[in-house]
Image (tube, rainbow, N blue to C red; front, top):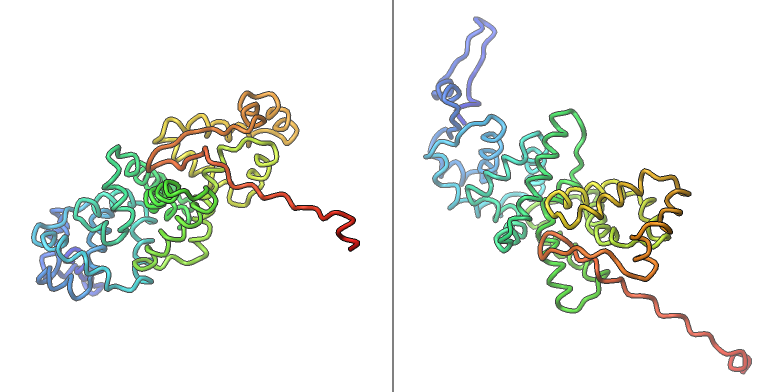
Length: 319
């Protein structure tokens, strides 16, 4: 790009510009050097770099540089999935992720970078899935700009949540129980995405756990509450619940309940589970229900119960 082709010399402390980059910087324009279509064909990842730099610098992509993007975006499938993982971290974890995502949508690139997510967004006429992803990315941007950490596991949990939630609904509609459907949905979405982005297992496994724990938040039985609070991924999963509640009002009561639960001592929580009305639902085996077709996982399906072990009679044993 002309904007990053400026040379500075300490000999006389001057900037040398051979491609008109200084004028483009002044005009806040991102322009490819040479023929844009040829440059994108040489290296399709330049398409993603254009999105990233335009978002980071708050530049507009010059019309001639933008024109071939939609037609050549399918070439991203030829790029190394390991390289695309590295590029995804630069795109979404450097403080400008929300704007990058908007540009990916605007230029028709998302369907070739996060294909399952793009398909789920296209089917979500409510716009809740798009709002959830953008809210997550804005939160991540705020953390980065405040010098706080962001984990790739949480990032990809948000980016792929629309695809996971859609796949989960399909499996549940086909008659699978919740536990089986959750794992199959996570595996299917992840395996398909790995064809484009090589998400390391150290991030994909926590991502799965964040997803799976969302349906557990509807369970208020005492043992399950304490077990969930002590889960090593609880904090990340709860943050994700809060994220979902920010765009799905039906989940706000559930989010507030778990925020209350974390503030209690074990003794206070045990007493509260007996006294709160939500606990009475748990004692009768009921679960909080808040379901949206694409954005929320259903919380009204119990995991299959184990069949009790059959005891052998003493007489038969002696025989």
